[in-house]
Amino acid sequence: MDDSLTIREARDADADALFELHLEALRANPTAFAADPQETAADRSGWIGRLKRNLAMDMGAICLAETSEGIVGMSGIFRRTLAKMQHTATIWGTYVKPGWRGQGLGERLLQANLAWARRHRVHMVRLAVVATNVPAIRCYLRQGFAVYGVEPDALLHEGRYYDELWMTKRIGGAE
Image 1: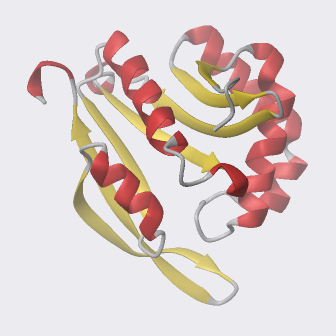
Image 2: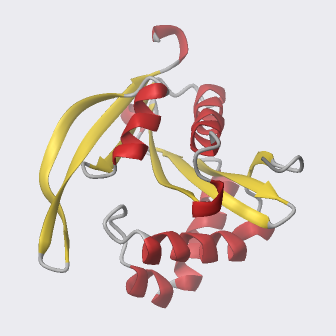
């Protein structure tokens, strides 16, 4: 592992690099994400704008893994805005570049997201993962997430349907 590896929360200045990494993830793993790479690429300014608004409003974060090579991994979290749902947050867009997998970066990114959630008094963190993504499922299970449901045929890619597992983890005083 690179000695210069840092896990940190994204800043406004990271928006362009994060957008490019997000597009890489969508293109390389089209069945792992609900977002479509063509639609996302066409909405670059919208995506970056939403990222900057969420950071400014402190309703979410993107935790990133950065090395001397640049950003090599990311994982986002956002908290619900409705008053009765602000105790919940959703993890999204977790991705580690292929050359950096198998070194625990996914778990470290998730831990950074969970730390953000704790600081924001989030009680319940949720995520969805395509049922065929076994390495990601194992990573989430190691971090204490549990499956609470399955959405059949959640994604359709190139004529094939993919189920999603819904996973959750209680944090804070109720772990």
